Image (cartoon, rainbow, N blue to C red; front, side):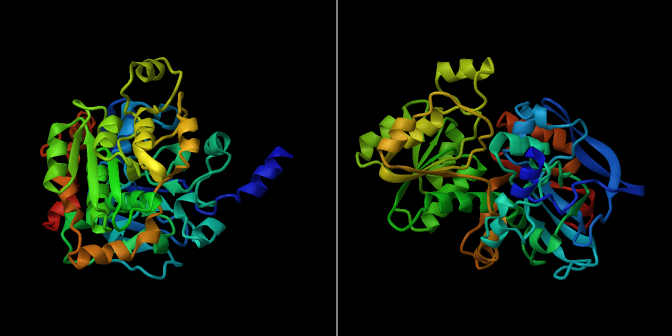
Length: 418
């Protein structure tokens, strides 16, 4: 009975997550090999496994902040040695399945992180990251009561799909998961549109950032800075940028934000001292590894909690009554001492969730094409794909040259001079 109910509630996935290896051709790929260990290995090149698939020859990829959860060990229970990492890449279509209608070999494309079917009720409402059909994970269903969408290279909780920190990537349901990219668009702009810009826009959407708002963003990494800049583009009156990294705070200030150094101030108390009314919109973009209090550090170290409520509590306290709070930093597990009373009594709307990437195209692509927004600032370093193990270590420890993200060129990307 339980199995029948489960299958009724969540239809079985129609897109296979299986990696169909090429019988002779090999490729290089970034593989998870344990805590703080990613290596470049040689694996079989993927092949078309379903009629809606495409094979993309990758030119550029990058490391997402959420990849660091797997790298740092927080997601070990959902990883298998040899998993191919990554969900931010661009390249050229090499081959398409017989049911792919909108793409052909030779098209330059952006690969979106979210693998959606386009057919289920959630996809029909453009809630693509909640897709019913592309993630077979029973573990996620057990944890959350439902499965979310599949995501490239993002643990077996999201389907176990091989990622695109590799020379080639199989893209299921290509007509929905790929975006055509102009040939003349610089690689950094195109790559930033794969995930960073979409996720930042999603954060603004969840918080409903609009004209005249006072916004606070916890986190000045690539996503946090992008949320801040897009908040101004959407008409925010003021944007407070919270972080402990003085270089990133200086970057935020150079973009027109009001920096809040969490080394010098308790951010919620400081913001309320200068904005007694509180923030209209508060956005958490620092990630679930962010802890301030000794209590949460002890609980996380001893396994009594998986996530921390420190920054979330600050955001809720600094946000005005009847304001909006959005969670963009990845929270997966559970936390203690969550301020549910403050959330309820202040009538605050709290929202979170993975980006609904497909929903925001072609709008975001046009925004960049028309010169209204340049997302390429998030890439402060360029390197070769083969050096990705070192770049993982640098991003984990915030030592990437320039302080943010590295764009990684594959041998194919280098051969094209891109």
